[in-house]
Image 1 (cartoon, rainbow, N blue to C red):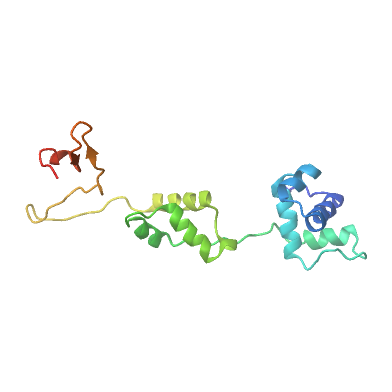
Image 2: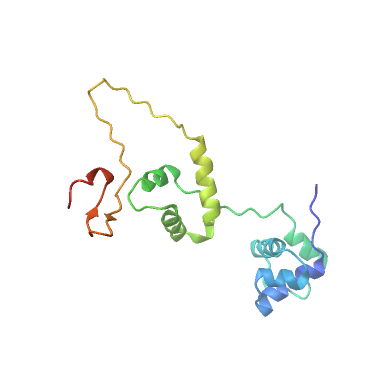
Length: 173
């Protein structure tokens, strides 16, 4: 299904409100009864065209339309993070997806995904990974310990005694 194009008057108004008045995409959309994504698409097409603001007076509506809509939809190239490295980093103590996302954005914010998309792409990648880890061992040869990380101190309100683990309740610190 072909998408209906915005009429030429609104395109010129979008450009005028952006470059002369300095409104945000959302405000432009409200003024012209357009969605913010439509405003963003028009401005992206204008940016990728050879045109500059102010528009030349000799430029008619048909030429403007041909310059903005001569190609298909504007493709924004976003770069995916290195998920293998991300998975290794998340194993480190204190590392979070938010910290990894901030580092990812610091490299090149223009081609970076937002935090929600970053997490969704990571979850999709994670679902495609194998979930099993085969461990072949001889009985009695290895010892496996289930470690949950640092524990929270437990303070007895009556005595003030501090404990770090339930099994240490009989051993005062």
